Length: 266
Length: 113
Image 1: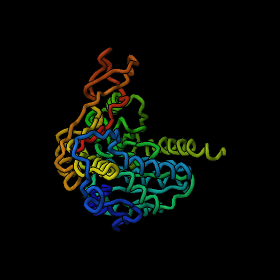
Image 2: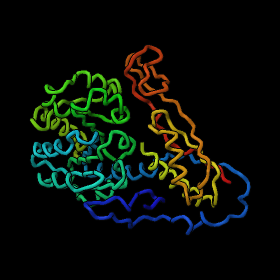
Image 3: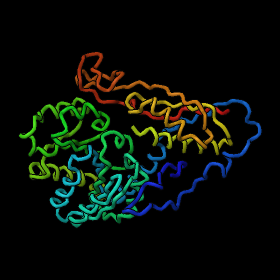
Image 4: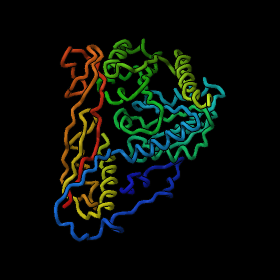
């Protein structure tokens, strides 16, 4: 891994291929100034830098956001635990959206399985394998965007690595995060992993068709979500049975329309 | 959470600053971490020592400065300071609080050896 830019290029793969490291312009330690002795530096001194630790990620995210805004693309970053039903929800969403332009970026540590499932629906998809990485970052998504050839005014779904912790901190350039919870996970999930639900605009309570078979209190789920994030929007649905899917599709269309309207007016 | 990735971000910033200021060795790195940033100080110290090997900050001391967690209480609509994310509002006892900052992760300064 290149520890200078921290992009982990030894691990990250796009559609199974090691990603290109071309275009980077950085000096590896020992080859440049940092490895040389500098006269007049014996005195201790303080350099104030006040720089965000994730400044590099945030700059990649800002570039992605500009690219998406220019094309009027509405991008959602789907975050959840592994097994909440993200990919099934996506496949059903793609079916329900019909011929609306859309694309998918799939993030997993290993395998092409999810991108294959998405492509089987006819949608365009790029798989990012993060190797040992526990989250997608702005840099990986930037590479994926350059592979996607996004149509204008499309919906972009970025399926993050299944993990309720790390993806909360890494901006990808998306319009918003959507957290997916399945009813079997337990009503206290939002309390256990508050950062993710604070960062999300919408929470989807998925697999509600299973609710009658589990001891789950859906109202308590919602109370806990609103305790963590009083402004969060909540939708209950079942990707499997289709119940509630219409409200999710309407939410996507409304947000896409809001994103594309300023461009259309120009 | 991802303290290793954070340290890689820090290393990038530190190497850039070292080149810009012609610095060979840094003795101390001070970072400001908000209470809601989700950073575990012990894990950050551990990752820092590992990730900084071979960089100008190898062997440098890492000093973590705690920034308070501020949140807006949706019951009394006041901005309050809380120590932990799930603490109730210290004014009205309400439980619905939305963070207003406190997620900072910033390198404050570097001390040159």
